[in-house]
Image (cartoon, rainbow, N blue to C red):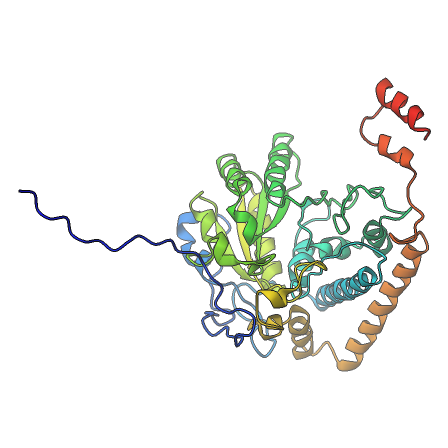
Length: 414
């Protein structure tokens, strides 16, 4: 007679849940933050297999007193640091003005990057001006750090007569060939594939320019992420692949994309790609890690994956209410602090900054953003116009307009 089948417990499916929901007490006590300066800095030729600790640790430079410590200190001069501070403050002031404009009906949509300013600004300053950038919609700091005109960015948000994209893109989906800023796409994962392809082409041509791409942690669950890592690894593409882990993909917390089980930096190791996990609110750490990755790419050592560990302090967009899925004002309690405050503290601790200089810079930034706003609004806003002619829908598709589009244009009377 067959032995009786033992009674087994029913299977169950694990669905990740964020540690806190609306109404819960804000608690980041489970977050492990290593001391600043404790993470080693390997040689740029170090293979991925010898960098496991860096994919699970956290590169930090600024300590609690604002001092730069440890092997990752990039040793930036005061002028460079002040330029970084000015750019980050400009990003925040720009964001505030454009959100107000959205609330006033002057545009349909806007996305802030509050708490993430150090990522785009420091990374833009760590690569060459000629390198190609493939951003997501929270990297407005790339353009600002490259001194791109604020009024031009605002015109795109307003979809007005001065919009270089002629109203064809969503607000904040900027594009500028001159700034080396690839068109933003709502399907974020595709930026990785395109950046790797561009980097491969640069190498094939014997060029000296590298590429850098950004996606959020949620997009690492998409196929484009894995396809891009395969090609980048196999062909040693000169590219920096950045994952901005701000813990929330709209209303889905990072555990849905796999952040509960491991770090996002660790995903690169499986492809043989050296990977770093970096304090995204530490301007110096972000700059140093990016410069390290850029040096690898220029030395034909291939790609680097960087997880930028941060927190989305504001709403996902003007269409979002984070109070519906996480505790109110959670961003203010993020243990890694505010990137602008931390860099200001570092400048002060270094003896090159003062409260008077900070106030003067704040006034300068506010006046700059205000002037740009007036310039852009003089060319129209979404609620009032003027807008581009309907004729423009036939332009910019072909170098020479084919006969059938020319006929359609005439039939439309434009």
